[in-house]
Picture 1 (spheres, rainbow, N blue to C red):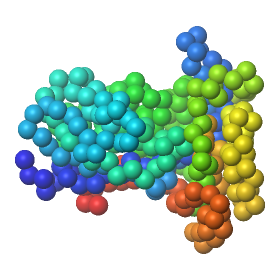
Picture 2 (cartoon, rainbow, N blue to C red):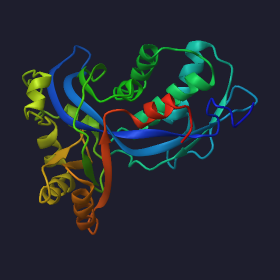
Picture 3 (cartoon, one colour):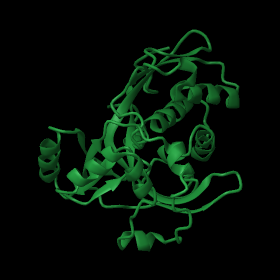
Picture 4 (cartoon, rainbow, N blue to C red):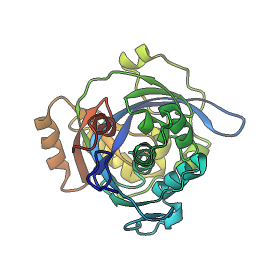
Length: 290
């Protein structure tokens, strides 16, 4: 098989981060899952994945993540799920360049899994639809479908019911506090608001962008509370998902870089640009000519 094929073997494919611009909990299903309203937007900050053909049906990582068993890695699980669901007997070796912080609420693992589903669907010639891939992704995690969907979205249900939305593409500064928020703990808290009133997209655009997890997270994780306070000196600071990452939006790269540099003395900081179209979707439209 030709590694320089236009299909994209051996090329680097992005697995971008996301931020939640709003998160409301409006109820709870009988199975315990929370019913949400949220808004997803992508940022250009990305992990990078490369795929290499192998001579058998094995799925393996070129370099497993430290502390994560290979078979538990979402990239491996996504590839094996594709094999099981389609009967595909091809294999792959996956190389992951990890840039997104783990456990930060930026969706890194979910995005990696979505990139595997989308790219291997092409490389293995499986021809599954986006809707089929989104359904497979949901079995791996609630955030995977939006990364397969590939466009900024209004999300409902457990986050899998998605409507395309066009948002202002701004610059973003992100702080990753030195802690990992336990999402299950936050959603199990007795103090969590679970009965917020449903709103509309117009309500969100008009300025309703609260995060119902914010208070519980700040009470349990003082580092997140402090990061929000420090970032709010420069712009309105918000929590993405259940965190631990917090972010603020800026109208220009210069403003964002200024805030990022000022905060970097005390925090792990990132600066990037918000985009409505996923960088992965953009790359897939033009092949793998990165």
